[in-house]
Structure formats: C-alpha cells, structure tokens
Amino acid sequence: MKNFAAFIVVLIVVLVAAIWWWVGPIAQDTNDHLFADAVSKWGINNFWNVVSNVPFLWVGLMGLWSLYRRKLRVAADYRVFYWVFFTGVLMVGLGSSWYHLNPNNQTLVWDRLPMTVAFMAFFSVILAEHVNAKLGKRLLWPLVLFGLFSIIYWQYTESIGAGDLRLYGLVQFLPLLLVPVIFVVYPKKFTHNHLLWWFLGMYVVAKLLEYFDEPIFTGLVVISGHSLKHLAAALGLYLYWRYLRLRVGIR
Image (cartoon, rainbow, N blue to C red; front, side, top):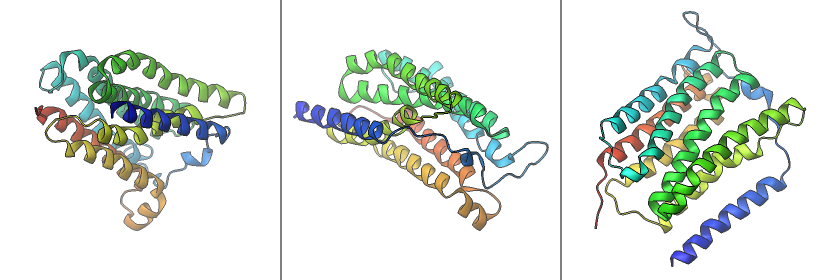
C-alpha cells in the first residue's frame, strides 16, 4: 500500500512537471502590478495592500516565539523546519509590504523570495512528518535553495527579455496539489487535523480573492480582493499555528 501511495505521489510530480514545462516559457504580465485599490493614505502608497500584510508579521513572530518557548507540539528533529517556515512567513510580511509600496518586477522579487522559503519549508516538513523522516530532512535545504533559484532564474530571464515563471509556478502550485494527496494516502494520527484542511482551504480562498481583485473592490469599495487575499492567507497560517499548538498524537 505504501509503495502504491509513493507511486501516486511521484506520478503526480512527473506529470505536472512535464506538462508545466511543455507549455513553454511564461512571462510576468506587467498588468499584474496594476491593482484595483491604488488609494494612498497617511503617506503610504497603496495603503490597504501594504498594511494588510501586518498579519503575516504577527503570525511569523508568534510562530518563532512559540518555537523559542517550546510551545509548539513538534519533534526536536523537526524544529529547524519550523524555524525556517515561520521566518519565511515573517519575511513575507516585510517583502510583500515593500512590493506593494511600489509594484514592479524588481520589488516583486522581495515579495516572492520569502514565499518560496515558506512554501518549501512547509512541503519538506509535510514529507518528513507524513511520508518519510529521512526524505524530508534531506530535501529541506535543497528544496529551499530550489525555491530561491526559481526567483533568480525568473529575474535572469526577465533581464534578457525572455521572462519565464515556470520554475516559480512549480514551487508555488505543485505542493498545493501534492499536500492534500499526502494527507489522504499518508494520514498522520494527530488530533485537530481539520485545522490542516482549513489551512489549505484558506490558501485556495486567498487565490480566488486575488483573481477577483477588481470586482470585489468595485462591490465593496472599502477594500479590494487583493488585500482580502493577504488577510485570508494570514488566517490560514494562523490556523496552522493553532494546529501545531493543539495537536496530540493518537496511537
């Protein structure tokens, strides 16, 4: 059964990677920098898109403080995963705020770099806790480096006029496809597992809010879909932190 589960996971990786690479280079659309809400307040450009990143800072600091105080229910061998993950979350708050002050391809680098760190650290710890401890430990730093390289590669291709986001796309979306499969075929016996699913669900909600940025702003006027995306993603991260605080192993 475990061999079959591993085959399914590997098959998904190979198929998605092959299809993604087959579609050809994907350049960054500069229109993506044009957000529906461009209102400035108190001298802060794109006010709500900037300040809506504060919850990332809060969750990142809360996670790091909980690790320092040993308040998270994580094995000693896995603590490094979570130090990297919550550091990435904290830096997402800073990097995204910096980007939204002046949205362009150059500032977008500082938004995406910490996201890749958080994505890859999370994926590595899921592999370690659910699939195979040795595999997850061995892949942590290679995956983090691959995530960082995906941004370097994108920036290089942009500099030569052939922008290509495919590697970054794999870093962001392949774990999103694989993690639910891993949860199902490699279930971990912890309490409060529903919080994991809420965490993933809030990420999906965040992407939908991002996609409907302008219609939401037109309807609500006060706040845009993109700002709400930040809040939804941060809420998901908070639920993951709660999971790590509350979970108890079941025999």
